[in-house]
Image (tube, rainbow, N blue to C red):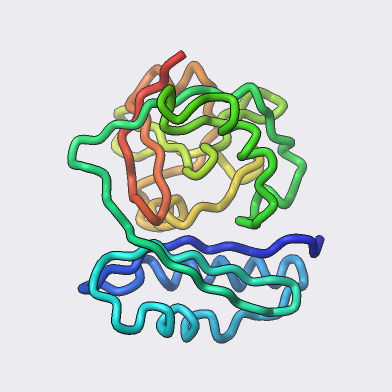
Length: 208
């Protein structure tokens, strides 16, 4: 339980600063406690130091290792054009719902990389992972949401074997999303979205 680092990926904007910062820091601290990593008390300061002098939107990546070392890297953030819809395919790769590391965002990304490698990026923008019971879990870099017409988005429970995404957490806390198990068939009965804290909610279309 120590041969990896915890990750937080977030967006910084000149006007707004770090988007959903408190939720990212809360998840990082919670994850560190669960696996015995040192508390990342200086994470916010490290992030602020990394954006000093920046004038354009940035994609920030923070890692925390088992020794408590924090590393922050950044790169340009380019938002998708208005009206963008991602194409989604179901991966053959399966996740094990009993694997508790799936609840944490870490550098151990073998299952996600395997799913992404099944299909060229020109053939699909994202791959959705199912668990051993064929329940919908998440994408390789996104959480899954379904608009079934009820006015509240459905999203799979953590117990299915997935990450507690920051955007997902925010939408649940705002009562804009509710937890419920989803099958592949369910995804064809409403409007599909995927999303993460970096890019927000993205309309999606299941293909294949």
